[in-house]
Image: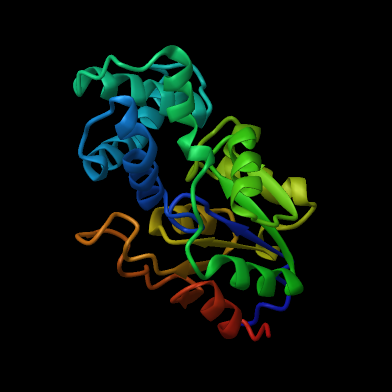
Length: 238
């Protein structure tokens, strides 16, 4: 398949660009344990993330009003603090903990691979994370996006088609001119439904050593790569 018409790469963020699980574990053990949050941080991170899809589903079903991801993360965090019987944090500290999602660390290949891909086309974040979260993360992690696009702009969550359609429209491109890059089949399948090209990047440690999901890309995906540098290689970008 020829990719000469691709003018933008749109990147999923959580798990594809940044190691959300490892980042939360590290900050939890290094910072929050000393503030009285005495938990198994791997379990806590997994539980926090596990609340993400159900929370978005409640919004889609009309059980909750539209909420950006910061608000959903805070709702899930409040539930976790109650479940773990953590009462030592003040309101400001809880908000600071919730913003750990603004301070996530990229996978080791991201900086170099992203720079290479940027030589060829626009590189844009396309995440369920809200704009403020993505901007803060980019500054924290040194991510040089040409554009930060968020599901917040469409008031939908991926993989709803409106998110991808809005992204292409804001970039002034046809869907076929955008390649979605993600480590998650459901995201790439959603992008395909509106005509995006797709690239699967393996992140077999996203959910830790016992990961059981997104280890095998769907056969319909256009390009499969081991990391961002391998993706650049496969697209002929030096």
